[in-house]
Length: 150
Image 1 (cartoon, rainbow, N blue to C red):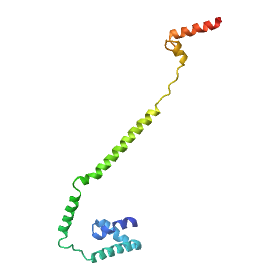
Image 2 (image 1 turned 30 degrees about the horizontal axis):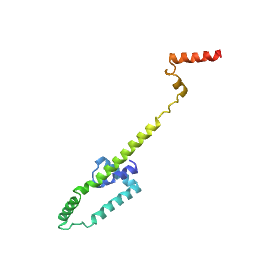
Image 3 (image 1 turned 180 degrees about the horizontal axis):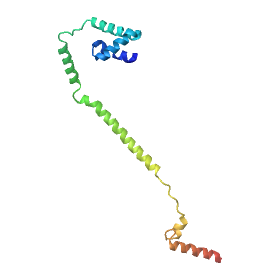
Image 4 (image 1 turned 60 degrees about the vertical axis):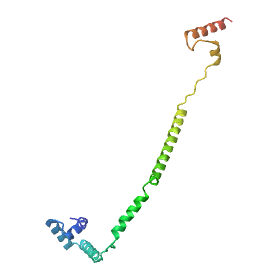
């Protein structure tokens, strides 16, 4: 095993949680590796210092005061005031949605607007027939023939 693997398993080694095979491999490695031996020593000293700490005992009425405070905070958050932030948020999101949909519709409408080709006003006035109809073609041919005669 590498030093990194050994150092990862040191807490389990000190707690006696490793198999006999792994424990023997770590012990053999610690006998020859100065760095890992120092790491194991630092780890054991840290646990010893934590064991020397004095335990803290809460005051006798700590639990009762804690639950009273929880109930007090819960009572503050009930009623219409607790719903106000959510209602304002929803109203804001709805306003943004309406503005976005309206703006998108207007942009889309302007984007797809096509220019209408203007029809020659003289042809509309002079001919009651639709453009490129047989009658229209006939009328054009008649006018061109008249021009040739002149």
